[in-house]
Amino acid sequence: MRPEGLRSGTDKAAVSKWENGRKTPSIESQLLIADAFDVPICDLERYPWPHWLPGRDDPAPLGAAYTVQALRDAQRATMNRERRTFLTYSALALAGLASQWAALEPDRLTTALGGRRVDDQLVDWLEDTSTRLTALPTEQRQHTIKLMDAHLATVTDLLEGTRYSEATGRRLHRLAASVSSACGWYRFDQGAHYPAGKLWNAALTNAHTARDRDLGAGVLSDFAYQSIWLDQPESAVEPLSQALIHTRHPTARSLLHLRRARAHAALGAAADCHRDLAAAETALLTKAADPAPGWCRWMSTADLAVDSGRCLLDLGRAEEARARIDEGLTLLPRARDKTRGVFRTYEARSLLQAREVEQALIVSTESFDLATRIGANRCVTLVRELAPAFKPYQKVDGVPEFLERLRTA
Image (cartoon, rainbow, N blue to C red; front, side, top):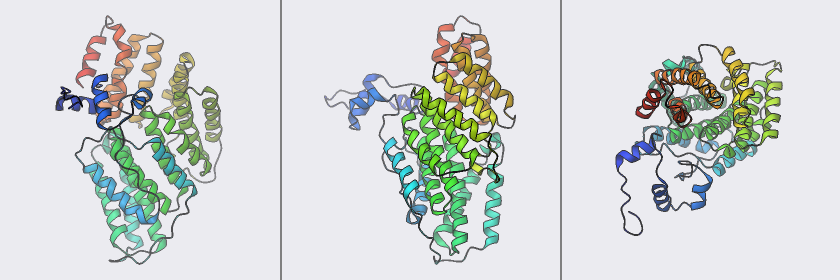
């Protein structure tokens, strides 16, 4: 109901379309929603739908006392049927988490919890199982998420109800962080941003307690990538800056610089973007004695080229962007289907800017088919966001059919 007593005319079907990204509420509907949540009108002017919607809680703070709480909260979020897929942590909340991670000294682990003692053989098996599950190709992982969830629940139970040495405890917390991060990425791919954020909060809390700075930097990078994806690049800069201060491996630093470049490009900060792109390239070419951390081991010249191209697109340099995107797609391994789908969408956007509509249609169709096959809803949404750019070309063969397919997907 409106304050004046008038009905909004909104039904469950309309809400479902808003939630799944198939339709944007009218200005009148958004004003009603903002009034219901006490959101200032200036927030609607500053942020596009649905990014002005308020979050309903804050992330769990860092510290050993909160590791299990954060894991349990994440598990509840993945099972919760509430309509909370829009919601993400605010820029202020992310900046606070990043600041805690950078400044707060991790607690020493408790070594005398109740229950039976965890031995190294069990932890070896849990770590090996996690490695096998997360190494599966993207297309297979959509069928194994229940195994990942169960694996995370097992690790959480051990942390909460067993005894372990400090060394074993750090391994368990590191494992909880790694599995939480992987489960968060699955939810992110499904467009379930609220549970993804809860899982990454649990990952950051456990990585901090395990004293694994590199893994913590990776989780902050995940939060930042989500913010960029949701058109909130201003939320990404501070977490990435904190992560860059506290991680040393050149591959990790390359990825962090690249993602910060994406945020700067989206904000129109060309000089800062180019500075980060140059730093990302330099870091990626730097040899390291140790292997890259697992969370960024996939980082390659293909990623650098395509994301550099996406930065150039955002900065209005379409011709240079196309060359970089084409270069990256040529270098990308076939096994990385999800990444290829995202990159192909960037290619389609650059082709549309160049008015090469027929080729853009081919590329977009391939990307849409791929995203549908591997069950990556956020990639489907990314293709769907190309629809407005195709609408002026409805006389081109195949465009009306493609637009209808996007509309009904």
